[in-house]
Length: 383
Ligand code: MG
Image (cartoon, rainbow, N blue to C red; front, side, top):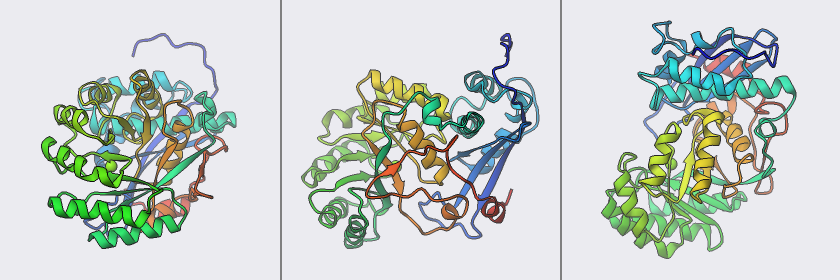
């Protein structure tokens, strides 16, 4: 970028950008992205270190960050960051976007930018002794209502048992997703029926279909599920089927939620303006970080739409979501909160973020407000 550099607002300089790939010894064929993680670590000359996370194809994102200097519009992102002032998050976002413009306007390139942007905001907060929500000018909420985010059981009955367990743990909202939904109408309806039975009449129930239907089938399912009073019906269609989402949203008695596959604000505009979804799901580790998420939330607010977070990875993602959701007016007051504990990675790399009395507090400690466990990171690091 050729913009004139204004007078520095801080004395910090970025000295290193690292993408750390963590992986359990055995990664199973299951829908749990907590089995591995790509953590971004940005170091400054003042000793302030920021962390972020990327939820993507991990090694592809690592090379977007750490790859060699190639030429001005296709280069490893670290080369355009080192020596720069980490406080200039907006300017650095655009510098990264331009440095990565062949491969990075969507998808893995944007995912990589996301993790770095989170780490830069973490540095700003730590350097100033302030939580990120305050730097973003927020404070709309100090706590959020977590919904237990889980997978369907192998059978409808097992799904009902899980539902009873989560309500017993104090959750007032629960989401079930993916397999075995999508096999046939009878099973799909039984899964939702047993989920509702297990939850009882009061808890909110979200259904995450897992990209399994065409628009007509999704409309049939939305109508069949309505009797069980779901709060939203998430990702029934392929993310590129924006026209299908439009048909579904027009015909569905249920709120339609989507957005976790999107990166960068213009793809969210397409989802909102063409797809006509009702709930906009923003993953801070994919969409472009805080810098982009705040714009997405603003675009959603202009359309009268709420944003929610998406996150199925580590507590870095949860912490980022808490700061974001506390900083925008158009939320549902809900927080996606993973309860799948089939893996140890999530609990080995940082202090846990816990639900207390059915609420999760927005961190008040500086930056993301999450203490990472360097030993745990070293233990699971493979690249
Ligand atoms: Mg989902």
